Image (cartoon, rainbow, N blue to C red):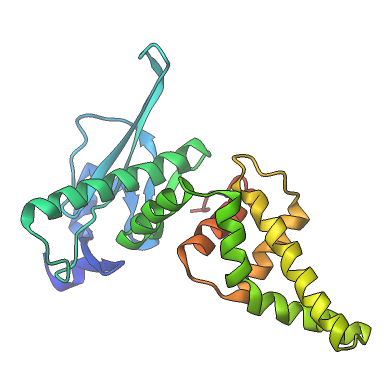
Length: 242
């Protein structure tokens, strides 16, 4: 494979099939120039291209019987960069965990009706974010969100409160009260996201998403909450038109 056949995704090199690969039946599995893989019926005889892996999805009912037709998507394989200095056995375990996360991302997309998988959604960075989100979500409680919000949201909420105070011509005492009120209100809104099915309307969700954008937070909690809000505001992502 020459240099023109290698592309870096999330810092990890993955093989991209050359023009000659069009003679290979696998060319119908993905569109390299658009960085998309197609979701298609599972074919156990499907061959693999170097640098890619098959993600197979099966559905069974509570009795273990096949619930619906299995599907698959051929996506770029996860390759750890050289900076991951781990024993070989540890690397294999880590790759296995990352591939499980990659499969979970693809399965969720398929269950939401996706017919294509964008490669940017299954990179090394994307799978690591998925695992982090899963870890934080298992410990996502109202108390944790409240504790996080009472610290992380202070700067952005103070900025918003000061805008309100300026517009209303508040004095210093009223400005302090407005700051406290604004922070308490947003923390209360965000704490609702601890519920499995948050009782949050679209306008409220959008207001929280806007606050996160203003706050420019990049911690794990902010990422998880932002992802949850995004899912609420975009229940079904539209497929990419090819």
